[in-house]
Every structure is written in C-alpha cells, then in structure tokens.
View 1 (cartoon, protein in one colour):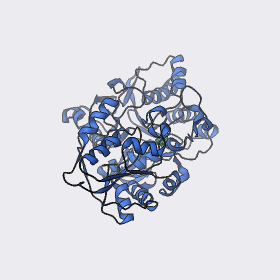
View 2 (cartoon, protein in one colour):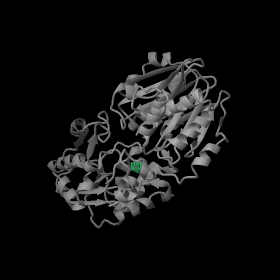
View 3 (cartoon, helix red, strand yellow):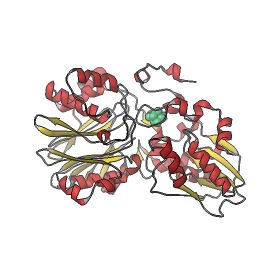
Length: 472
Ligand code: SF4
C-alpha cells in the first residue's frame, strides 16, 4: 500500500505544494519515503527522500519544484526494500532529458516476466520497483515503438497483471490510469480550473476539490494544457485483449487502510466500519462492561459494536501517534519496538472490568497478544477479543504487505488456538458472509486474503498457483 497524488494547473506554479498537502493527508498509506516530481513545462525535477512528508519537503525544496504540474508518492515497501532507490516517483530519462515521471500504488504480479522482456530489448532498470517498470514500459513503447502514450498505457493494461493506480507526468500532460480490477483506490476532482488526483478522497478534501469521482478500473484519463480532462476513446487494444472485467476492489482498504473520512469504492469508510461492528455485535451474546478499540483503525468498528449492543464505548488505550502503524513497519524488530511504544493503557480504567477489545484484523497475532497482556496487567478481569474481518489465511499479491502464508497465524492455528495464543478469554471473528453484507456491492470486491480466490491466480509468484491449491 502506498499513496499517490497529482496536481495539474494552468496558472498556479505551486502544483508541488498542492501535491505535498495531498501526500500529507495520505501519510497513513506509507511512511518510509516521500517524493514529488514537478514539471516546469521544459523538464521535470524530482525530490525524494526517506522519511515523513513534513521532513522531506521544506519550503526551500518546494521552491525548487516550482511548476504547474506535479505528481507525488508516499511509500511503504512491498516489492523491494525500504531504500531510496525504491522510493517513488521515478523519472524516466531520455535523450531529450528528464521529461517523464511516474508514481504508482500496487503490486505487479508478472513483474519478472515483463522486466525480463524489457531488459532483452535494451531497457535498463535502476530499481526493483513496480512504478519504474510501468514508467519504462510506457516510455519504451512510446519512444521506441512509436505508440501514442494512451496506446502504450492500453498495451500495458493488456500485458501487465496485478494492481496499479498510477499517475504519469510529461512536460505538459498528465495521464491517470488504473488496473482493470481497480484493486487500489484512485480519485480525481476539480479545484477551480485545476485538476487534482489522489489515492483517497480525504486528500482531495484538503485541497477543496469538487466534482470528486473515482477513475474507473481499466481506464485512462488524460489531462491536457487547457485543463480539460478526458477518457480517450481509442480503447480498442484494451477491448480486444481484455473483455470487461468485474472490479475487485481491495476490501482491506475499507476494513483497515483507508482513513475513515475517505469515500472509497463508493462507500463511506467510517460507515462500512460501523456496519462491521454492528454485524459483530449481532451474533455476540456476551455483554461487557466496556468496549474499547485498538486505536485508530478499529475505532469505528468498536463504536458500531457498542452502539448496536447498547453497551459503553470508551478509549482505554492511548496511542502515540508519532510511532506509526505497526503493521507496515518493514521488519519484526521494528514492529516489536513500536508496539511497546505505541499503546499505553489508561490508569485505573480497566480495574475489575470485563472488556471487549475490538481490532480490525489479526495478521501474525504478535501485536494483539502484547496488547491483551497490557490490558490484563492494567487490572482487567476478562478480555474478550472481537475481530472486524474473517481470519487472514492467504498472502496478498496486490499491494498489501501481508507476510508469507507460513507467518499468518490463522493459516497455522484454529480459532481456539489463536485465542489461547493471544491470551483472550474469548475470540470471535466476523464471517466472510457478514463482511459481504457490510458493503453495497459485495461482488465488486477482492476477498482473497480470507478465501484464497485470487482474481488472477495463474499470475501469482514464480510458481504457478491455482485457486484450488489455495482454498482450504
Ligand atoms: S488479497 Fe486481501 S489485501 Fe490483497 S487486494 Fe485482495 S482483499 Fe486486499
């Protein structure tokens, strides 16, 4: 998971500042690095660095990125380690200088095959990153094979499998495109005469963008100098190769990743989370003294649970917001450290209480185990764990850094064994059937990390994997 943003203006030379604001609102989508590429009409300048948005972009840096169009990226690593060469955006250098840049969110499942093919044609790579692959594919087919850029992107959609929501910048145009399944979100809006793009609507809100709408899966939007935006009609290549696909939006975006104030995949994120909480409560006969969330992603799930049950909701754990999300820390040592630093129980709050703790999901189980131990040490009489998603049994190949199957606790243990391992007095998960009830068009979502039904099973990994192999 990463976050992207773009801004295209006719009069304002501060496009990079607008992108910076949009990235700042999407810091939750990636905390390892941040970058902006901006065009001044003649060439594209880039600044990217490891760290948070506010650390990476000083006033002086933003001054150097003056220009009327810009794209940006915040990264958390999936393919490739957390090092600067893998940070985005990417500039694709040509004989005419730095005139193309790309930023993307997602994971490409046939990366090796496509990269090998491009390398055999003399294309040189500087990283292992998916964004660079997309950019080099487009530029190769545009500059060397003579395709127009929209045609090169259409060819990309035919050849490249997996998840990508992307923005591609030239000196005077912006291309916005999304994979045929629409795994990751991508939203476009108008700011007066300007065009703004972001992964999440919360980033467009901060720019006061109006007329916000999702970029449809498998579509390209071209923004030109007169500030109009259009979807090219020349999609014959795409239609020829790929008949209309059912969207497969990532359900985990709604459960965990997206900010609750975002409108994503035609759903209000906070609303879906409250429905999840209500569903969890529906089949739960236990009546606690208090319901608390694991903050922040489970806040609305816990609220929905407590409201539906008519029991008290409160915040028993205080989160240090400067530590970052535990799940997206790149290695186990960093995750362990940040759990201890991240949560602290309120003094005298838990004493003698029977508590329901609500979390959005369990991946490895290590974080929630420490949290439950912390709450018990704080005096709770009983701790009952409720999870706002089904057991995560399968890895994700579409842009979420879930561990290998072997590391997923629900792949190795029964629910009762998990309960025992995390130290809860009882444990209940939301069923897949109930999760599907919490969105208005359940058939438009991917649930592969729960049921193993990958939208593109034959492309997964180097070893071919079939759906049958994956379903338990
Ligand atoms: S496998 Fe899970 S995390 Fe990955 S896209 Fe599908 S629902 Fe999202």
